[in-house]
Image (cartoon, rainbow, N blue to C red):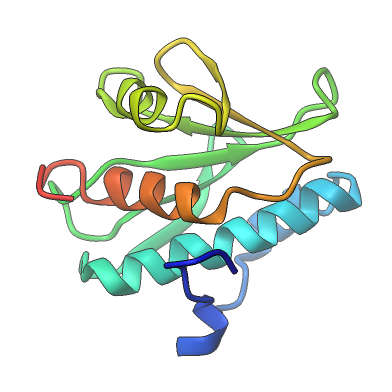
Length: 147
């Protein structure tokens, strides 16, 4: 893991992946699955560290998604791979937030950005783990405005 980011597996066992998400992710190529697994660990670790009151892991629009269980804490972070852009894994934030703009300002080269919701990760490059950690923190605590 990158500096400043600890592995969720180091702090507690990873929860089982919900069956519907597992079915979806199994359709992806191995590099996308590997990036997803690492990204999922980061999101779970951030949720624990940020004390958001539980993390809901579900499919939204057919995409693996994470959001705080408690209302008005944060926003949803979604992830997807698509055959029309097989070289990347994408993260999506709510388009009516400032999250994509904030990430673009803080980390201009970490992702390929698309509009006000998509952050694309190249599958042939290492995950920017510390950056993803911060993105997950900002997203899962968005309504706190103190992350």
